[in-house]
Image (cartoon, rainbow, N blue to C red; front, side, top):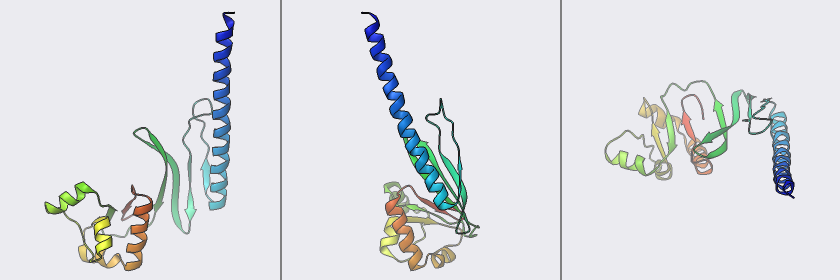
Length: 162
């Protein structure tokens, strides 16, 4: 009779491990498929007992270095995409406009504005050469960056990568 609770707990733990293993297998297959379709290399992950490992793949796509991995911030794990390109030499930094950035602008902190109200309200831009940065941010680039920031609010654009 006393063995019943122990067997019950062992059964629940076994079912949980099987469920996690099944999810992990599906995730492994999805990452392998994505790496194959992009033509980049998936770095295998062992994790703890085959579970909980981080995914990572890297390679060149369209002549640019692309890294896709899982990243943990606070208690959340998310997929992080990074694209590296040759330096623009502008000291460019652009990211989503937030409340603190707006306060900073009122206090006189640097923000390069390009004269496009939608872009200027959505994105804070810094750089070493305001005129060159503004010229670099053509209408099509502003639309692309605004769309990127809307889809991925944590995105950051720099001189060497996104």
